[in-house]
Length: 205
Image 1 (cartoon, one colour):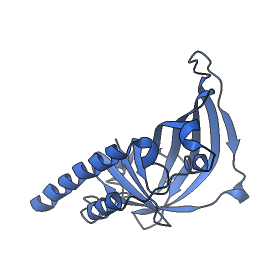
Image 2: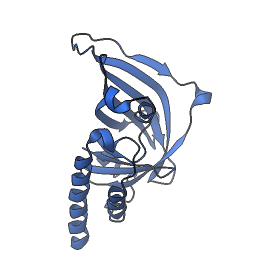
Image 3: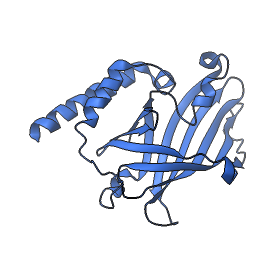
Image 4: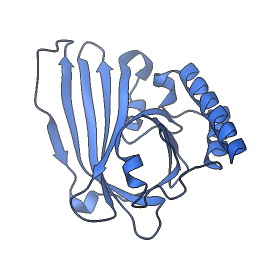
């Protein structure tokens, strides 16, 4: 066990170093980073929290998590990647996820995925998706459904004094798609998740 912890800490340090070298702009858009993906796979094999969605472990998962790596982009950033001249026209400032207790019942978590990005000449904007995780007996994999999207100008034309309300766009129930999300690694400050297609996400507190 001591040897596993030593190896795990070594892998975590290596992962953070590799992600930092990439830079946020490249790390959260679709890219092929085999070295990082291999480090993640090794960390997953040493996962200290194999049942992250159990009642005992839920407190460890709640709170704000900064996204530092996404192998195929995210529900927030993937649409931005399809825009022309992404490198010159859009700059990602921050991407994060908040997980909190749901009042709608047991085995549910409220999730908010958000990103702040800068549009050339238009200032900073926040894009946000709100949804719910739910699960049955499996305490590692959850179904995720997003119910609303919203967009808000954070610094319109670079002016922080312009505080405009968020434009919320509800998703009609028959248009909502379920996605499977597996929390494959969780410790005190790193969380790794995988989508159904293998897309992996690395979060840091």
